[in-house]
Length: 105
Image 1 (cartoon, rainbow, N blue to C red):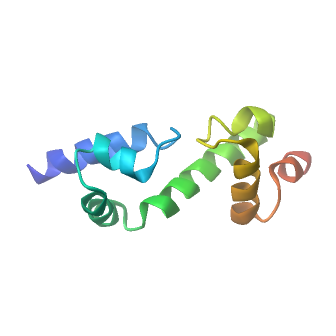
Image 2 (tube, rainbow, N blue to C red):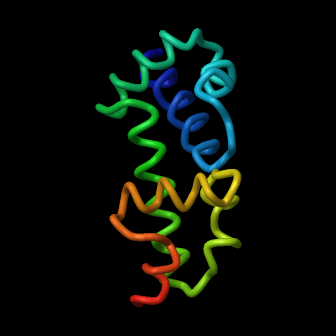
């Protein structure tokens, strides 16, 4: 049914949000073409896959920084590789580097 399809889709997406996967790989895990995956994603989440993933990853990173974890320990947990990609994404999203955020707590 439609509800089962949405639940399976959401479960696959949400269980892989912090994995270092491309959208193509995530679409494959959902048994969809990339265009189908993006269409379903927009329908179920109301945003693009990229925007949603960045928001979720940055939310996790902020939580871990507040708990006292270092950026070098956080970036793989948040689905980034290498560290420089994480720092750049964090600065774009939060307006400061992870180190500056950690020092400001």
